[in-house]
Image (cartoon, rainbow, N blue to C red):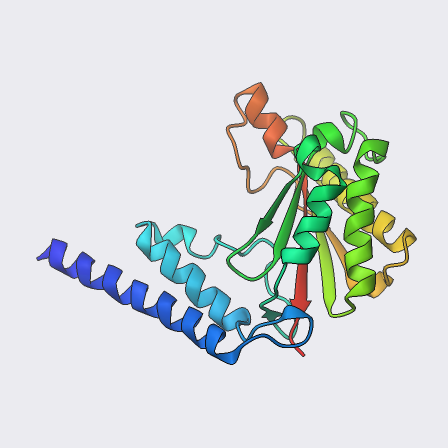
Length: 220
């Protein structure tokens, strides 16, 4: 009985995900590459994926990096922006550029190419990558950005929180210095929360020290 119930739930989830994707595709492409898939559809897809992997606690985390956005997030065709960021040297620096299930584009910036240990001054090698992000935000005024800083678990919570905020702001401030309107960019520090690797190892701590820069299109 449990097997059949679970199979039914999985089938239902697949149907929901397929339905939401189909609705977005039927609407077609609009200005700036946006599709009809907004925050509600993205959340439904995330919930469906969470159920499929068998852990409902993960459903809210999938594609929920920037949290709620006033007005909702619109789907977007990120191909051009993603290509430009990757060609700026992101790949060689280990900066990962990923389209997320909620419709955002995440630029994951590891600390080894962005900041010295315990510091928040940007390293020169990262600047071409941030320049490409700035160009996208200036050329496409429907886009916004949110910079989120994270640390590993070493040190006090207060110190880590302050460092994460300062690093997120350093990225955001650089974007505005390149001509991005200040109200298009926000910054947030989350300290050692939401680790992506094991803090008990040096490699894991290095992965947890990062700034995640999310680009997203707002609903028009």
